Amino acid sequence: MLKFVKNHLESITGIEIYPLISLLIFFLFFVVLFWWVATAKKDYINTVSNLPLDNKND
Image (cartoon, rainbow, N blue to C red; front, side, top):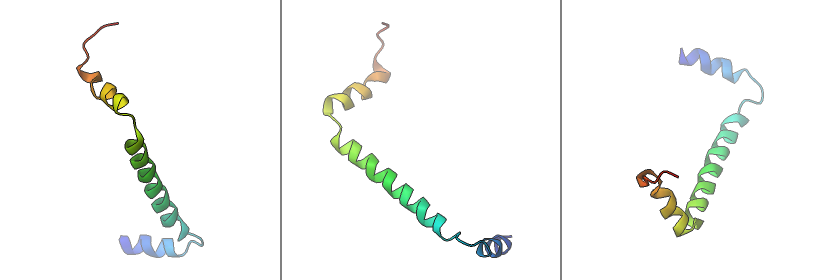
C-alpha cells in the first residue's frame, strides 16, 4: 500500500515543496508560542491559571 502511495506522489510535479511548507509552519508556530509564553506578564499568567479555581458568580 505504501509503495503505491509513494509511486503516485512521485509522479506529481511540485509535490516536494509541501513537506517543507508544513515543516516551516510547524516550526514558526512553536517559535511564536515560545515567544508568547516567554514574554507573557506574570499577573496575566496567575489570573488565567486561577480561573478554574475561581468560584465567584458574577
